[in-house]
Length: 182
View 1 (tube, rainbow, N blue to C red):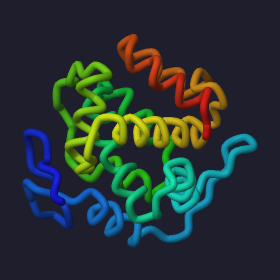
View 2: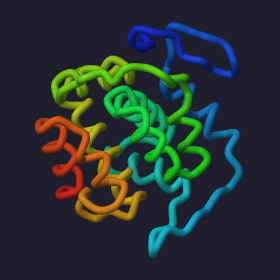
View 3: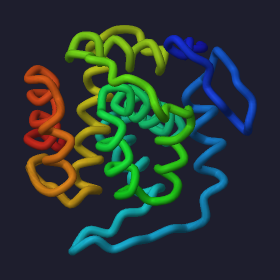
């Protein structure tokens, strides 16, 4: 099932396309990654481990998890101010940066998405059957992202910076993801 790219084409391998299967984009981008490990305090972040953790939290295979990471990342990037999106990207390992940057979003206005719209956008991007599944995906990716940022509660360091720019209803989802690591 193809998910329409909301409002603008996605650039894959230098070509603009309007329809994308997130798992195909994600798999192609992460396949280019060389093994990349980075220490940040006691946290070791590796892209494959990130995807495996999302897959574990969802009870899904890794290919599906990659697609869901892509969908949540693109939607989160739409919601964050450009400077915060850049700061978050700087904290990601190379492979996840590729997922984050899959669509050129520089000099774009922030989309004031609230929780319902955010979850609906993830459902649309990922081709999920309903909002409940999309919310599970958002929780899994948010929780794994917080862990990768070295934030056990979603309120430390860069995770705090992300939390601070979200509307109240998305803050609740961000904090739920930290409180219920599953």
